[in-house]
Amino acid sequence: MSADQQIIAVVGGYLALSLFVGIRAGKGVSDSATGFVAGDRAMGGVLMYFVTGATIFSAFAFLGAPGWAWSRGAAAFHILAFGVLGFIPFYFIGPAAARLGRRHGFVTQAELVAARLHSRPLAVVMALVSLLAFIPYLALQMRGSGHVLEVLTRGAIPMQWGAALVYGVVLIYVWRSGVMGVGWTNTLQGLFMMVLAWTLGLYLPYALHGGVGPMFAKIAEKDPGFLTLPGRTADGGDWSWSSYASSVFVMAVGFSFWPHLFQKAFVARSERVLRRTVVLYPTFLFFLLPILFIGFAGVGFDPPPDQADQILPHLLLHMDLPALVVGLFCAGALAASMSSGDAILHSAASIVVRDGWIVGLGRPLSPQAERHWVRLMLLPLLLVSYLVAVVFPVDIVGLLSYAYGPVGQLAPPVLGALFWSRATGRGALWGLVVGSVVTIWFSRFPVLPVHAGLLGLVANVLILVGVSLLVPARNSGATREA
Amino acid sequence: MTIRRAHLALGLFILVALMSLTWPLSVCFAQPLPLILGLPRGLFAICCWAAATFVVLLVYDRVLAKSHAQEDV
Image (cartoon, rainbow over all chains, first blue to last red; front, side):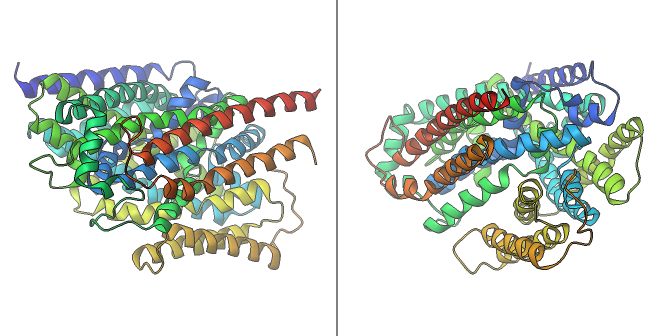
């Protein structure tokens, strides 16, 4: 068996196992929308831990994080810093959202906020912001999986075919099992990624430098500034303290409000399970530690990769490793891509139907019809993302950097809806719109050495508070019964 | 103020306190040497921070669960 055939066999085995687990996961779940989107609100602690952990750590974690460590040194530590803090707000908002979800049948973030603030347009705008972030994010996961397959099989599986194959598997298990398919495959993928990350993260520094300690000692001796916080910028200059700290702050604030992650509040069996998930979450960050070791192991490697995020496949290809090891890495990269892609796809489809059709347009559907339409929406969303990923030459990373900013702006309307009784739909809507525009504008035309999202958040909160206090709500007599 | 509200306020205080550590952590552990356990000081500090956050959340969660139980009684 040739090396390429061995790699394809390992990847094929991994995809078959994911498919088996994903299809089996749907057994015993009701055939309603709540069953498909929220797993009948019965997910336990272990599944919640891996769903939230593996969902966040996408192809970026496996390819982007080593790239940051290799090219920007200590700046990569900020990924751990925001990850440690990012889920803490969920300790408070998660149980509050879950309670309301159980009482009123909510399954999406925008639906909850729109009902609390009596504003249908707000649901539509929040859904649009979510989709604008989701499609390039999903396209990036697809391109990442196709690219890894193409590079490591030396062109035997072209990128287009690889992405289609991997996301064909995702489509089948999400279609069949909904959120439970996402949950059980994420558990498998999370465990697989952890084992692989630690194996490669210890093996590569040992093979290239004689161990983790000697590796850092060598880098520190050659270029002490490389390991000094806050690290470097993409073009090799010094990253500023304010940029480092504001990036951690903005990423941490936005973390819990990613719609596909927030939706997990409606999935958990109990509030206790939700709180425990948040408490345990910082432990998942230790999975990222060896991922950074991999990037640092590549410092000084000759020849260097063309792009920073190619450092890991580049090292594997140039180190003459056994095909089985390369195949396992390939499967690990696919696990990272799929564990985020499936959750995003599932969430995007439910958002289109629930927030766009049912809440936004005011067209109710029966639970069975809703599940049917959520399933059907998986197809166009996957197709659009696939076209963005492999057919149209769009700069996805550039697109994503614009899409990321507005997602953090979902925090003020959600917090206002849950914890501030004087927040109004108008205030939340205008705050979200202005905050998103400010974020995109200052991402494009930076004026201060801080993350653009911070400026967006300031504008967002000011508008939310100002409009809510000064402009009377249209339905000022309505109460917060929802 | 109810016990639940008091705990919400305490939780927010913990969150703000943890977040505000970003800056001093970055500054205090900026020196590249000496390395601790083979890790750069900054990385070691963030790992300790992650472990401490886990412990703080665990203790907070235990206390919260106990007082919620008392309040419900």
